[in-house]
Amino acid sequence: MAASRHASRARRPVPGDAYGLELLDCYEGRGRYEVVERDDGYIDTGGDVLFYFGTFPAWPAHVQEALRAAHGRVLDIGCGAGRHALYCQENGLPVVGIDNSPLAVEVCRRRGVQDVRCMSITQLSRRLGVFDTILMLGNNFGLFGGYRRAKWLLRRFGGMTSDGAILIAETMDPYQTDNPDHLAYHELNRRRGRMSGQVRIRIRTRAVTTAWFDYLFVSRPEMEDIVAGTGWRVQRYLNSSGPGYVALLEKDG
Amino acid sequence: MAASRHASRARRPVPGDAYGLELLDCYEGRGRYEVVERDDGYIDTGGDVLFYFGTFPAWPAHVQEALRAAHGRVLDIGCGAGRHALYCQENGLPVVGIDNSPLAVEVCRRRGVQDVRCMSITQLSRRLGVFDTILMLGNNFGLFGGYRRAKWLLRRFGGMTSDGAILIAETMDPYQTDNPDHLAYHELNRRRGRMSGQVRIRIRTRAVTTAWFDYLFVSRPEMEDIVAGTGWRVQRYLNSSGPGYVALLEKDG
Image 1 (cartoon, one colour):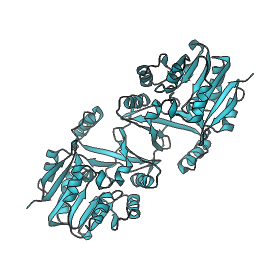
Image 2 (image 1 turned 135 degrees about the vertical axis):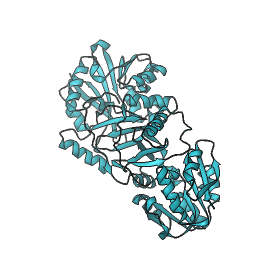
Image 3 (image 1 turned 45 degrees about the vertical axis):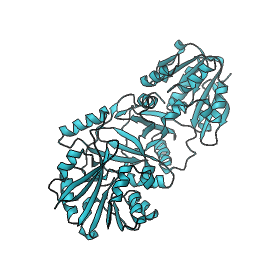
């Protein structure tokens, strides 16, 4: 592979449910690698889609420990292929999974998740009933998307949860990297008034792409800043040996 | 991962040697998956970059058989990480490797390829001396890029080779697929006056992209049509169990 020639205007990939498609492709044995394109042109393909289909023994210790804190009625936000929802079900916890990807919801149903709905995080309300545990695992604290939106949604989640509720939020400290592309992206983000770890990305599968969306990675101090004044507080952190960690949030007073 | 929000204009990835960078990343243990973007928006990440570093025992039987036909002074076009050049060297065949990727050339040098040059296929001339074998393995018949260019370069290769020379050209029959995206792309190509299997692609690694370039896949009849009148002829085909095959070309009279 070499040689460059005729320039051409690239056709856009087709807008659609590329995230669900990658899950369905993997579920049906057609493909395994997730392609994430960031809005600075950085393209990442480190992710094995099989990851979304893992079971408890394959999860890192801090995620296993986090799940042991799950109790009562569970809401799994961005449930993907349903791995955490299935774990809750198998352990006798009633769980509602939501994902905004129709094909992800389809994969969850095929895999036996009993209550899964196609819905985005901003559509959540008390209409789904009251929850004792909210799961935002698989870095899904990121679904908050940004600083203000996170605060707004955390407050809203207060009204959807019991007094003893916990919120199990997984993220990654974005500053624990020496990748120059990532460091330059943090700087770009700060220049445009965004949080360093607020990545604008889209998922691409075959000829299909998701819309661009914001996904938020935060350090522990940034986590605490976001949580402050929302009716939640950090009860404890569950740490990994790398940049990933779980924040276990409880109601604040 | 879910939720879509703020639209944004994507920044372009940085133009550069993304192909060589993926080889260097793999060589230095940083990454392993090749991302190929086609100009219809199709993105492919099936390729393990380790493939470029394979050795003889790992190669398919038809490629092994093709290499047994190599003799005399060898030119390896699009030598990548140097796997075929190293094989020739180890078997006592003097070999010149060329690749238009500076970082690929660097990887070849580090791996011990003795004569490797940064040069595109169109820069080849008799100044490199006369060759007895030309290698276009790893689907590098594709580097011909298109119908006319292939004919032009084949004629030119006639003047750079001995009377008993052979050209070992690997490609893939593009019609052996039932992937609807690929079939639609063939149709698009025919509508714009290109060969069905003439893919316009670019390689993306981290924030870097190659320029768009044409890479040609042909069926056996198309191979024979291209070779006709160029001073070469198909001596035999070495077939795989799939769409991939090698055409062994010899001088025509």
